[in-house]
Image (cartoon, rainbow, N blue to C red; front, side, top):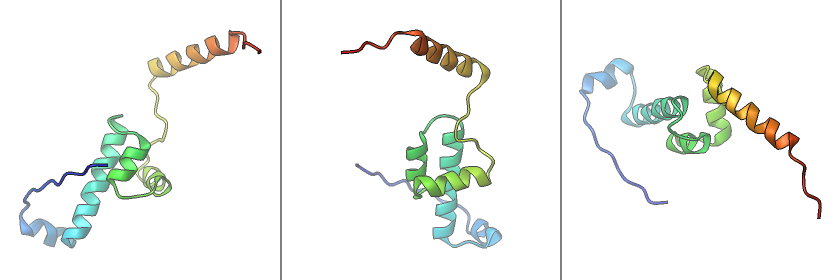
Length: 96
């Protein structure tokens, strides 16, 4: 997988206020960004975990800690999925 680097500046007093090192701040930014992009359906579970530099299991723990559901359907999406499963269930399965 190809990677790219992003650079941005922040005021030093932010790190002092947060009582964090640069590395801690970067880890937190990666996590919060991954959580938000997952929550808004921009990244998959695996992609978000990768962005946060966590395993999928560790990221699942972060989702739980931040009260973000792993599966989050709105009413219309859920209705569409249920219809799709009903169609699959009622279709005969061909046997060889």
